[in-house]
Figure 1 (cartoon, rainbow, N blue to C red):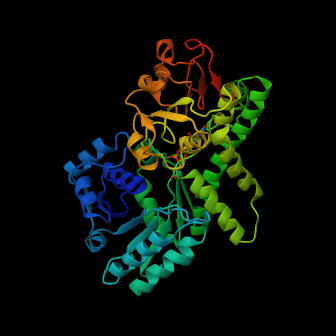
Figure 2 (figure 1 turned 45 degrees about the vertical axis):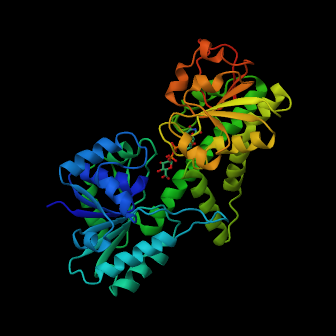
Figure 3 (figure 1 turned 90 degrees about the vertical axis):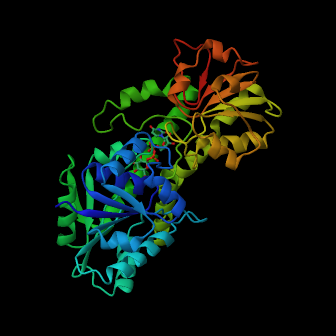
Length: 432
Ligand code: UGA
């Protein structure tokens, strides 16, 4: 019989993990905190915007493999493995807030106390190295009165899901990393994952935690490196994408995640790079490379504003259309999006902002209620002094000369490589 699972957390990671395992035939109980949210999920509404997740959620509810609840006791009693998928946000100083992790572990422990069967607790949330050993295990032992390894198992199993591709990434991973407290815990988790067509790497808890941070920090560094070379290319008057086409052909380097642009954002890279910097300092090491990667990214996000100024002079009362507000396409997520830094800089300079995004307007309105938001890209372009593409939504690739003809002053900037130079004349890229 397949394991029954309890998944704690109903955000991107929790929901995609729960729905993903249910897609693979496991019985899943997802645990959330708010009744209204749980009711919506049980009706097939994932709440977050994530392609294909809604269809999949509806399917697994219908075939009886997935349910959501606020009752953790019920979920623990009716499963033999729990995945902790709660959020690990940043504190003001950039270090990680482990409050929800501690709470989840304490609550699981409470309900494991009376449970006879061997239960495995798996940390999937991104947690800084040593968290599972120093916070999760002591919290579980404190409230359960049981001993790790002997009475219950523990693993750390990082996720590598990209927003917008999260379910696909879950179902078709490059690899599965299993950090294990002991062999028994790792064997049970490996047995679950063996039906996935992916290599499995078994290691200890601390190594698994660090793999996740090193992975994200490397990807952020790789993009920042592409941006640095891109800024040099801009000065040389060449297209950095021509350069990286050549660089990416070196098999030691690979062409992926080399797209220069207006910086990296989202709920992961900024938070994780900062948390790794803070952890490193706590351990007594100054991570200068990572600090500069973070600083370079801050500067990169607003470079386009400097480029606007160099063409338009003062931006005071200039009408600027911003196309694309989400931190990347196919999501309504604006966390740490480059658009936020650009809007703040433009507002400081007194520009009038007209903004459009296919999905993220409602979220952006919460942050900046005072901008003009439009229903189409064309409406945003009408009568403006300049336009900036910040997110590479597919629909912006279809913009044509007539659309840009709606502008008062035909000054087009790209923060991402979107427009086709064979179709659109005279536009300027951030690094091309
Ligand atoms: C990232 C990682 O890619 C996932 O592997 C990881 O699981 C996830 O964080 C996480 O820690 O949970 P995500 O934040 O969803 O996923 O988004 P990415 O697709 O990695 O993009 C992050 C940012 O980098 C975006 O702002 C994107 O525009 C930017 N980016 C990405 C570039 O500027 N250039 C690139 O070549 C790729």
